[in-house]
Image (cartoon, rainbow, N blue to C red; front, side, top):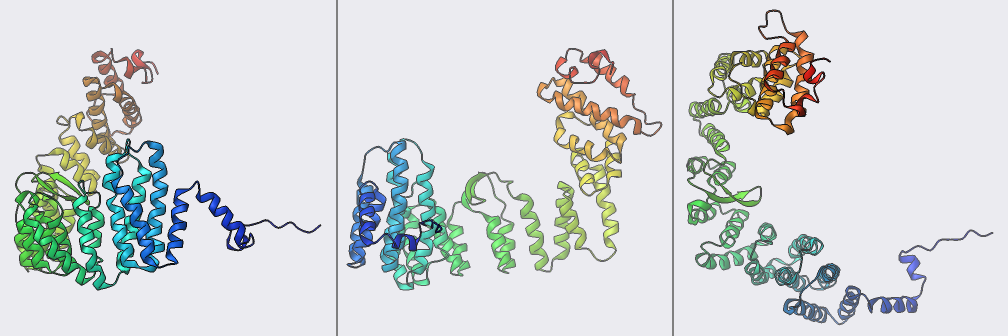
Length: 472
């Protein structure tokens, strides 16, 4: 018996159906599939040239832009498919024949986000995903347009920007500032510069101007624009870092020393956010020290790093400070740093430092020296410290675990009772490992005191071996 071959849905398989049958299938499917119908119509129009394709696409863009009917959930789902097909028509069909015409229309397509969002009954992630994917493809399309022709797209870019009420396309427009040609960048800068005075509070024109200036290597223009911003919009730290990277150290020092005042609106991880005057203070001081190093002001830089360590007890800052010292000087300075941490007014900061350095012996001594000062509400510091110390410094771990248990019961934090029960288990495990003459009450005496003081905390005692009876 001859082996039966399986038909494959590929170019060879479809070719075997014959032209007439394929045409019948396409006509039948396009009657019910608007996206397929539009794709076929655009392809047919392409036979007469890109102008006819552009006319059909413009007609569809106009219809969407002018529509006012409410879009329910089901219709939004259908529109996501139709819009994806329309974007493909612009990018592939028209883009292959006339990239500039396609770029103009893809910018129009992106602008549809605003009238469509106003008509939606409920938000639709699939619909927005179409626009986000189209933005990425649009950048590649615009890059393929000739340098001089790109300048003709500036008017379309501005129309898109001015329709963007809520900043949905801010990232897209900013990305374009890094890929447009020199003629397009020059034309765009001219248009934006005229609009800046009329947009004193609008985020957009000035920010894009700065991005264009940077990509064109015009740092002085960027700085002049930054000076035009109100104080609460200036990101002096970011500017200082940029100047530092550019090797303009005197200018960088001037900007890094401009301490912000009040609340500011600046980009944080690519998103505009309100921040207080202390935001970035740590990074600002370290950057200033780096700039001072580049200016051959080594002593000033080191003094700044030491002050920062003395305030924060940041191990990273200390390592940086020590790495900049002359040979053998680090030993004396390390002793000085350890002594400072020992006497620091913030005992929790000191404990974190000794654990991170790491010097577990000093951390344990620190715990015992302040055994009556710890407060269980600082459990974020004390619980990890107790765990870190339990293997080599069990006495210090016991002190911290007891503080945590007592605090949880004293404040009656029911949701923390399982943690308190676990800490009691750790205490039972650690007590036999304590050195002689440790000075602490026995584990049995500790539990007995808890029973006298917190006998009604049944949620806790029900999870402790022996419970209130004291019998394991």
